[in-house]
Amino acid sequence: MREDLDHAGARTFDVIRFEDLRIKDITRSVKGTVEEPGQGVRQKSGLNRAILAQGWGLLRQRTGHKAPGRVEDVPARYTSLRCSDCTWIDKNSRKSQAEFVCTHCGFTCNADTNPSNNVAAGQDTSPASPRGVCRRDDTPTGVERP
Image (cartoon, rainbow, N blue to C red):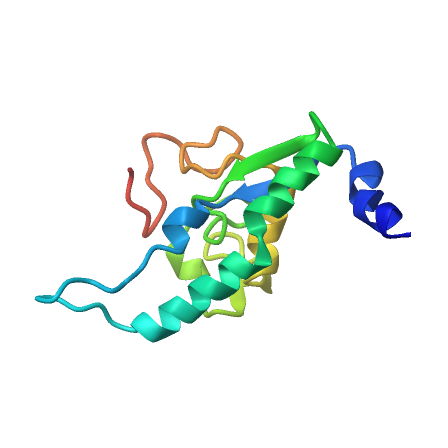
């Protein structure tokens, strides 16, 4: 029974996409130095433990083993700022931790659902994406070029 549950996703989907999160960077310490101590060290430490306990990297690795050749990594950059409806990128579209309202087309959804849609679509999340509204000569509002 457990074996069936483990392989259900691998058997069900043609392509499985993961947001390419840099877990090592996300869980970096904020201790700081003696001269400039970090802020929120205890909270960040707790968050880091919770992230590492979830085993995000292990989930990605095991899924790759169970569905070889069908797992894709989508760059994490701008996934939460890009409208999953029109692909416009604007930091002002993220109204709060829970609300996303596109400043370009007015599309509204939960702020967690929007990046999930972007990852599921597998769209390139760079501002210069040929699929999106953005072009190399026009930087979206509130987004700096790398």
